[in-house]
Structures are given as C-alpha cells and as structure tokens.
Image (cartoon, rainbow, N blue to C red; front, side, top):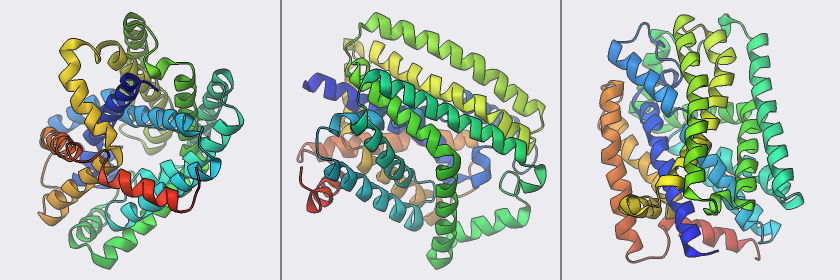
Length: 380
C-alpha cells in the first residue's frame, strides 16, 4: 500500500487515540460511576454538568468508535497473512490487555479488542467483500443495541448500585485505588471479569459490527483516501448533523429523567450509542476531507507518529495518569473542567515521546515486542 495511505490511516488512528483520552481522563480521576452518570453523587455543579453534557454530545463513545473502525481496517489489511499469525497477534494483545487491566487500570480496552478481534478476523477471512462485511457489520451492531434495550426492559432501579453508588462504596473505591497492592489488583480483576461478561453478552456485538464496518471501508477504498476531499467533507458534515440530532435530545432527556437508571442508562443509551457511532464515521470523513491539506500537514504529521505507536502511546497514557492520580494523590481532587485541562499536557507527552523514539527506531517499543511475540508461535 502506498505510504501516503499508511500515513492517512496512522494519522486517523492517532486522532482517535488522543481523542479517547478526553473521556478516559475522567475514568482515572473520578469514580467509575462518574463516566456515565454526572449525578452519581447528587446534583452536580453547573460546570461539571455542562462539561459532562458537552463531552457526551461530542466525545463519549465517538473516538472509541473511530478506534474500533480503524482496528477492523487493520484486520482487513492483515488478513493476507496466515490465520495462525493473526490469531497469535490477537491472543498476545488480549493477554497484554488482561495484564494492563489487572495490574494497572481496569478501564482497559486491549483485552476486549483482542477477544472481539478474533471473531472479526474469522469473519473477514470467510467474507472479505465490501457488501458482505458491511451488511454483517450493520446487522451485528443493531443486534447489540437491541440487547441493550432488552436489558432495560428486564432491569429495575433496585440494581443501580454501580449507577449511583453510596458514600461507603465511593470511599472504598478511593481507598483501593490510592492504596494499590493486592486489594487493588483483586478489585481490578473483579471489574475486568465483569466487563468481559458484558462484552460477551452485549457490547461485543456492537464492537464486532464496528470492526467489520472498518474492514468494509478499507476494502472499498474509503479509508485508503480514495475519495475526493469534497465528498469526504460533504459526508462528514451530513453525518455529524445526523449524530447531533440524535445525541442532543438524548442528553436533554437524560437530564429530564433525573438520571433514572433504566431510562438514562438503557433506553436512552441505545440511541446515544448509535449517534456516537455515526459521529465517529463523521469525524473520520472530516479528517480525510480536511486533515490532509497543506495547512493541516504539521498536525497530520504529529498525529501520524502517535498512530504509528498506538499501543505504546495507549499504555503511556495509563502510566502518566496512574502516576498523577494514584501516586500523587490527585484522585477526586479535580473537577471535570480541570481534568480536561490536563489532556493537552498528556497529548504533548505522547507526541514528544513518539517523535523522539521514531528518530532512532522504526516502531514503538510495545509494537516491537508485540510483533516478536506474535512471530514466536506463528509462521507468516
């Protein structure tokens, strides 16, 4: 594949990775319940409520969608290698994700991507045509949304301990996060197993659908930059408008429901996730339409080096954040706006480290290790 196309994919991957931190920073600095429910501990301040609402409309789930689509695109590009090689690659990613989740941070996505990626690789191997991948991806995604709505139907508000934890639960979470050690590992292990159960039952369907969508979009040339910039721009603005027409009313209705567990956490979450998925494709289209121009070349170059070291930079974000919040004791000491202000600082670390490392090496340290481990038990 021409280097220009690789650079485009890398820059889009870098954009997605840096965007994920916009939401993840709250996962490090605030209790788990704060991610989905701004009223997890009562009525939030005006600033907290406003920041959460804006992030919900413009970022929550969106960059994860982009990342999933680009991950699926990579699987499609790599399916030219043997199935054994690809399965080995995904196995090591999942194992790395498990260690990351249990020993560092339970908000990990690598384990989930490794597990779901195995299913995506098998489907891609059996049906690599654009039409087949697109239809299957859309079907699986909507199955996931249907299961989410069904969960809302069978759930009642007595099961909302995670959604609105009491003061004792919040204190216990803060204690193990700040203390670390075996107690923290056990808590992260329990959270990891719970997350993987939800992946198997519900979220994995959505994620698998998005990966197949990415495979389809690389197959038809859309993610290779083979469409005119004006077309990307038009598609991006139309899709962005559609996503906002879905997401803005959803957020307003969530506030209107007083953050009722079933209504806000299930019935309204399903259209919210659909809107986020559409928005993720919109952001990709807008980046392909505008991001490769001369005026954006410096930004594209910076994002590209981050995208070439996605795995390393994802883990680097974790190391920086757990140091700040758990070692320095900044956990629950910052409001949402202050946490957001930290994000550009960590972005600079990602970009600076990537530029420095790639001056001397062809790939990131974790990418190198991943490739070596993959080759150990497989033959291309």
